[in-house]
Image (cartoon, rainbow, N blue to C red; front, side, top):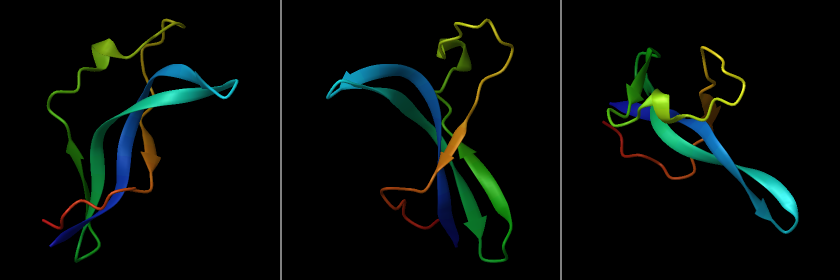
Length: 75
C-alpha cells in the first residue's frame, strides 16, 4: 500500500481577500510513499504547463509541495 505524503500544486494566479493578495493554486498531483519507504509521483494527465502564467518569460515553473488537506485513499 502507498500513502499520500504531499499535494503538488502550481500557482496559477492571485486574488484579493480582506484587502490582502492571496495566491491561487491548482493541484497537479501527489508525492506518494510506499511501505518500503520508496517515493513516487502521481501526476495529473490533464495538467498542461503551457497554461501556467509566465509574466517573466522564464523557461521553467515551480511546483510546490503542501501537506495534504484531504487524505487520498491508500493505493
